[in-house]
Length: 321
Length: 296
Image 1: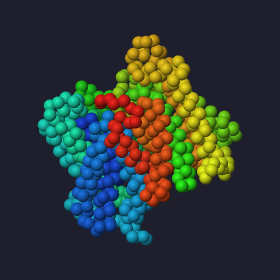
Image 2: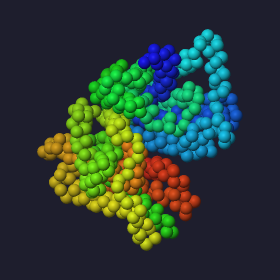
Image 3: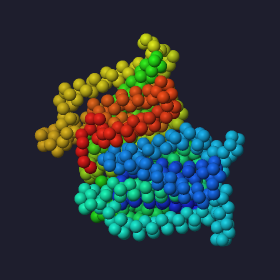
Image 4: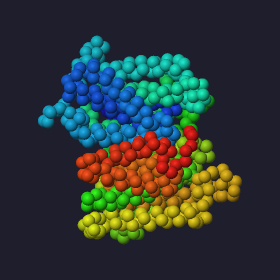
């Protein structure tokens, strides 16, 4: 019960919610505004995190050069995925994106020489050494902690992640109000109409996909720094589904609904840890981990059936079809 | 050359399992426009029910397989009543159905992990009995799988082509509204599609469990993506496409590891090969081999 009242624990929940906000914001641009059914979002997170870690450990790059390159690599990944696939029908596109994310995970698991394989980033360096990619980040974080006068590193990370998240949310909110954003929405509503008005639908879809992928890349960087170790298992398709759940919890087509969805999700996900009363006590701790995911599955199902526009979405603007 | 034939045989075994599963996915898609992401976990459900009969209850493999298939069909029917029917009544589109099936997949898999535990299980069959055919060696499980799959494919093809029920299903796949106007009992036909799809899921699960020898509740989900690739390769909603796609994919996966083919691909990359084949095929023919060209 003591963790329930621990500030550090809830700061951690807040950090994870912030990372998910950035991840799901990418999906909001891709699906909520452009109508692209991307089910492979986690792949771009992996590309961002791995690019940064590999450049830092293997090439000895500065974190401040490697991180932007990780984001760029994620965006390029979005273009590579999009070039052959955005012309496909939406159901085919959805399947191809899941497939893409699984391919990325397979490659990360099997290319030991490049990624450290299934052992994760700890095996990135020479044999027998535990590789660290976050030395520079940690010293930056402790400097920020000094400025803020915080005693907890979790609280510091919370501030950093949410500053970035709010900045990205504000940028996105501005971007979707520009003519560019209106073209995206018109593609979501009626692709043929947008094309008939001379808009290059293919190019706009690619842009939305690449920008959403770049956001996932940023989420991947923070994920890597927050946990100071990751392996291909951290990028299972489950994470993409969590991002989708956040999108639905918040609401489709609304930028500021994303952090609310992420907050509610974080609360459900963390809150299910405290189910230590009957009937949950009948199960062992590993079985309760399955129960948590069952509860999350039930919440998604209930949302899809009863509230297809999301908790805060506008029914007039966008309903999950 | 002999290892080429061996790989071809392995590919046909794997491909026939993909084909059965792809048929089940495609059938439901053709009628309900539902891409069932929970199908892999339904396969695992069937395989584990069969294991329950075969292991702890000491039933023969045939009885166990039938029990697993029947249980999966019942599961599909129940889910149709409690989940898919309300969604259809709300005129839910592709997106809602797909997301609901993803959530269902999560529920089913975690439910199986909760019920059966994460440890791998194996059917009580002799893994060392081997059939030799020329230079090709096939395990008993592989022979059973390919024979059963062959028989099933013929049976399903006859069912769809010759029986009234099969024609009803094809009519509904063509045009649901028109079929309803022509007097087809849409509810009954939908239930029938779920029964067939469930039986196929259970069978594919049991056969995959036999061939892989040991399996856990996650194995269905791992099979799902190649099955989807097979469905898309053949064209979603096309029965013959699903069969062809499944066989083609199984063979492509196995043959990619052949040393005569540019040294062969590392076997761990077999699933990647499946998707590379898929991506190439979609570039050439975006609607799949047998799919109808359709906008949106």
